[in-house]
Each structure stands twice: as structure tokens, then as C-alpha cells.
Image: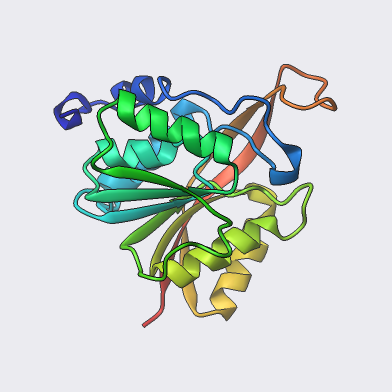
Length: 211
């Protein structure tokens, strides 16, 4: 339905902007909506550089309102399942899927990522986990859950933690590559935010299980 419209990354970005941001985000879950331009760049790299979206079964852990998951669906994924612990965000993702005509290829489930409601493996995990700034180890919790559900994982992390995360993955038998470095623009969302926005250096890492 949409794929022929996305011959340019800018068109994908505009599409993703139609998906709402999280309203009244919860700090205990470190909720920040991924900017549409960053989400589009990530999906573009995975879809056309890595060729690992079209026809694939994709899992988005911590899907939020669904920008990465719905973006993967519109780029030709066979099926995308988004998982988030916050029912409010899952509802927004569901509603966006309906409005965008993607119900047949996108599902959102309310669950804790460490206890996903299924055991079957997917082709690929694409995720933007919490950075683990306010809850130490939250980022690794997401990553280790992803490792249980696919042999190919694409995960966005704060640049200052990349070396540590890659080392943990290596010790568990995973190879990793840095595909992209960029900035995550965090809008003024919580009481302690003094600026209208803040740029955080991030890196997109590709993980693949060593045979």
C-alpha cells in the first residue's frame, strides 16, 4: 500500500511524524519518544543497507507508540510485533496501526520485555531500549531479552555505554558492529528538564549470534 511512496527517506520520516509521541511519559520506564528523523534513519539502514526488514518477522521491544515497529511494517515486514509494558502507549500504537491501514502487519502487546508472551523466535529485533540512566542495567535487560528471541538484533544505545554493551555481548557469544552514530533529541519531558530539548549521542549496534 505504502511502499512505493518511500523511495526517499524524507517520505518515511514524514510518515513516522503522523504517529503520536508519548503523552505524560513515565520516568520509571525512561520513556522518550524516538524522533521521526532518527527512526527513519535507523529503519532505512536496516531495510536497505542490511536488507533485513522486507518479508521478515520483526520484534520491537519497548515499542512505545510504535514508530519503529510501524515503520518496519510499512517498509515491507511480513509481521511486526511491538511489546511495551505501558498499556497507554500500546493503545496508541494500536490506534495508529488502524489509522494507517497496517493492522494486518502490525500487532502491539502489553507485557514486560523480560517476560514476553511468546517463546517463538523472530527473524530480527529492532529496538530503542531505555538508556539505563535512571535505572542502571535497564538497557541490558532489553538487550538480553532480545538475544533470547532472535539471532539478529539491532539496538540503539547511548554512545558512552557502547563499549561496555559490546563487551557484554561478546562474552555471551555475539558479534557486533556499529552501523551509525547520531544524536537523539530529547524534548523537555520531565520536571527536572531545564532546556526545551537536549541532544544525546547514540549509536545503532547490530548484533549477530556467533554460530
